[in-house]
Length: 112
Image 1 (tube, rainbow, N blue to C red):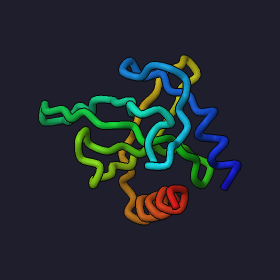
Image 2 (image 1 turned 30 degrees about the horizontal axis):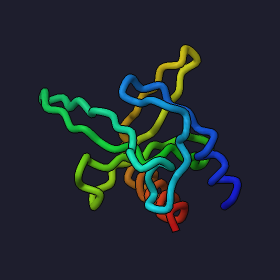
Image 3 (image 1 turned 90 degrees about the vertical axis):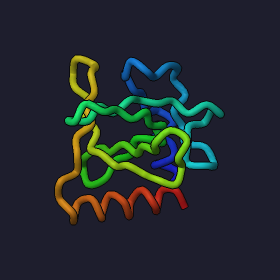
């Protein structure tokens, strides 16, 4: 588990909405600082939703990102996370139910 915690401390994001370089997970499962960073998800129907970034974590050779809708820490969104060579990032839906369940279980284990 200590290796996973070290991974979170070293992770860096390059979203326009994110600032700073301290991305370690705190006791609450959020960022190490008291002000969680956020991104805005844009949906196909034209709506958007601002979400707090809870962290990025590896699982089964890939990376994933955990998000919570701003002001609603009871909900959790999990997406695939891809960092490109040019420094840009994408989040991608997890379409496979088996993969989603395994990623959710990994995230829960990391938060214990």
